[in-house]
Image (cartoon, rainbow, N blue to C red):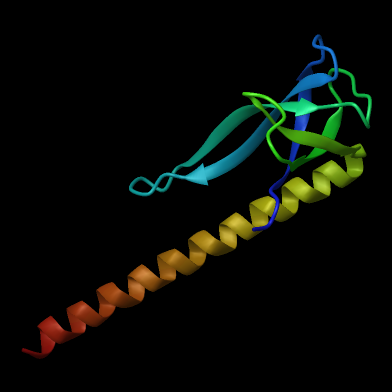
Length: 118
C-alpha cells in the first residue's frame, strides 16, 4: 500500500520530538456543490527535520510510533513551491467536478430524449 504524503503548516512544536501539523484541503458538498474548507491536525515526528511554528512541511505516513503519531516530517517546503502545489490541487479538483457534472448532464439529457420520443 502506498504511503500517504501530505502538506501542511506547523501549528505547535511544544512537545519533544513531536509537532502538530495542520493540513488544509477543499472538498465539494455532494448535494449543494459548495466548496468547503476542511482542516485536520496530525501529530508528526520531528527527529530528523527540526521545525518551528509557521513552517510549511511535507509529511509522510509511517508505522505508528504512539497512539497519535503516525506521520514524520520529510522536509520543509519553500513558499513558492507551496503556492504551486495549492494551485495544482485546486485545478485537479475543479477538473474532477467538471467531469462529474458533465457525466450527470449527459445522463439527464438521455432520459429527457427517451421521454420525448414516447
